[in-house]
Image (cartoon, rainbow, N blue to C red; front, side, top):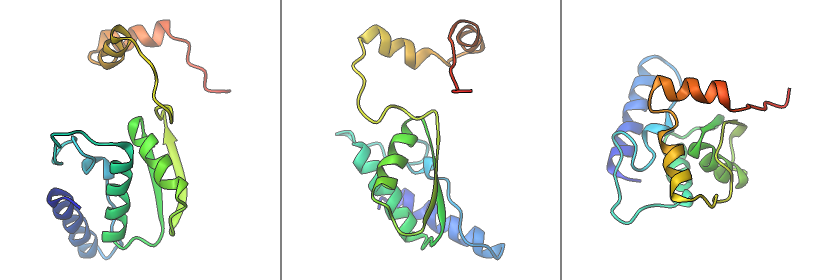
Length: 135
């Protein structure tokens, strides 16, 4: 596990121990290329991210936990959960990306990246995109 992840895991352990609780961690802070994490020169795979999350779970010695994944984190959580790791009690996915790559044009990719950059863009999506929640 990378050094920033080890430091964050250690801090989570200390903070939880001080409160008399088992550790809880926010893995999104540890995913490569996010916040305090390393930014690899050669990129990374979903498998790399799942391995990082699995290593943190082992480091924190979690015996019961719930994986929650949003967007790309949902893809990571699905891959990790597919291994049926010991201690996993539930998997919660919030608007996960599809499990297989999407073939997008450069224009489509750019539009998706910019879709939530400002309030006007979000309001446009709410008014013009049909959201189907299966209800």
